[in-house]
Amino acid sequence: MTPLPACETVITTERTILKPLAGSDAAALFAYRSLPAVYRFQTWVPRSIDDARAFILRYAVHPPTDDDDWRQLGIYCRTSEALMGDCGFQILEQRGAEIGYTVAPPRQRQGLGTEVVRGLVGYLFEDRQLARVMARTDPANVASITILEQTGFRREVPGRVTLQTGGEREGDLVFAIQRERWTAQAR
Ligand SMILES: CC(C)(COP(=O)(O)OP(=O)(O)OC[C@H]1O[C@@H](n2cnc3c(N)ncnc32)[C@H](O)[C@@H]1OP(=O)(O)O)[C@@H](O)C(=O)NCCC(=O)NCCS
Image (cartoon, rainbow, N blue to C red):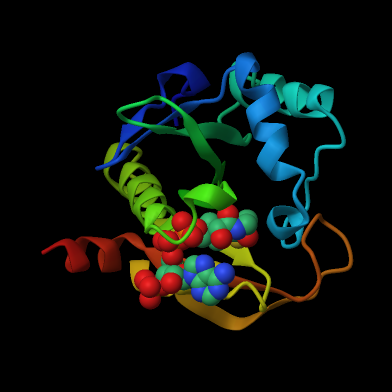
């Protein structure tokens, strides 16, 4: 697959623009990502604004040219351009991708998480022509599971990832959607 510079990823949804985070977003990203209610279910927690800036530089501003690295996008309000959260994807082998998403608490429970996941999945299937999109989530993360199920993801069997190594957290659930299902839903 042709490498895609992170700066070329721009996805538009009804209320948002998803595009690579900028270094100037570090303080805003730190403000919500450092809240316990947000990092409770996540593996990365910024300890400082500098941590957040390093994350942005690594995954959004200067990601490696390899396609199989995380691309971290900001969720920006279409009208005010305010940062409302962030999301990301990683291209996997066999035409797959993993996604992740975070909505800042003041913006939660307004349907944004669902809108963003639909936008990301549509981009990966329609623009990138992938075959499968997956997401990992903690079994207690009701909001995340609701989003995935409402978007057409299904829990994979056996579902629980119990690897001791390899970066996957024990106990996470794996949800996935195939391109055929996404296309059928859109009809
Ligand atoms: C998960 C998350 C992205 C959801 O974002 P959101 O914008 O609030 O999601 P939505 O408004 O689209 O809500 C989706 C569904 O979850 C439900 N929901 C949202 N927050 C909830 C909560 N705290 N408890 C229970 N249900 C919740 C909503 O009611 C909605 O269901 P409905 O469509 O049947 O009404 C957000 O809570 C978040 O960023 N959490 C912290 C980071 C995280 O866990 N990311 C996911 C890692 S896999």
